[in-house]
Length: 341
Image (cartoon, one colour):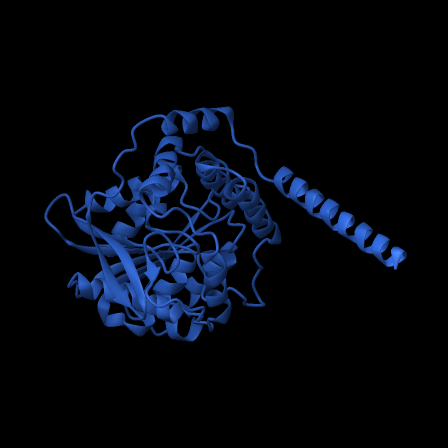
């Protein structure tokens, strides 16, 4: 009996040591922030928080979810509506402000919204029932209906690109154009390179270091660390103040970041069927944009998708990973506007 007790004690101690070692290793593998970034985050934390949400906000009910959205008006005569669909585990505020401004300055209303499980969007019925990308694709159709927008231009990034593809396939009459950025028509296509396994482990490690153990300031830092991880081998400066202000606004004036939403979104991606055949039948103009250094969805996915779509244009961007780099915002939005117009 004493020997069994001693063995259990040793196992327990070993488990604790293993957890401590894992946490130490995980935190050590996370990219470091520059002193300039650290200093600017501290400065933003002590300044008044600017208003990030300035458009018309509301809620739309879709499949048991209460979806938060914002409609940002065009700054001159309205030419149309652009609806933005963000990637996995990200909410509406993840869109760079300058990206949105480029559209509103050009005469387009911009609609952005919080995905299921993120931001201010919430489930009306408490249940663990899974949902699909197709169901998520119906969410922004419901938002467009609520806003009485009959036809829009749809722009999606990463998982949002997959959702936008499904929405254009299922509701082609509701869209004037489709832009799919750093996305795929079949993430698990065995003929194409797979996502880098290092990215997920680093993202989880960053959440452990900054999202779980830290306070509000650490969670602001987490947004920068995740951006650096998603950049992969791409280089370039990050506009520190706007990102820090958006993160602090999210944590202070909204419902913060919901890291568990990523797992549900991943399950929806895993359950999705390939879309090559359906995309090959689209008649609306399509723009495919992809970064050459994307570590999450390699550029080969974008190129294969572009090769099978009839009315397609493409933009392959050097020094761009799996994010919307500040230095490329004007290039990307100009190309999208050219497709739209």
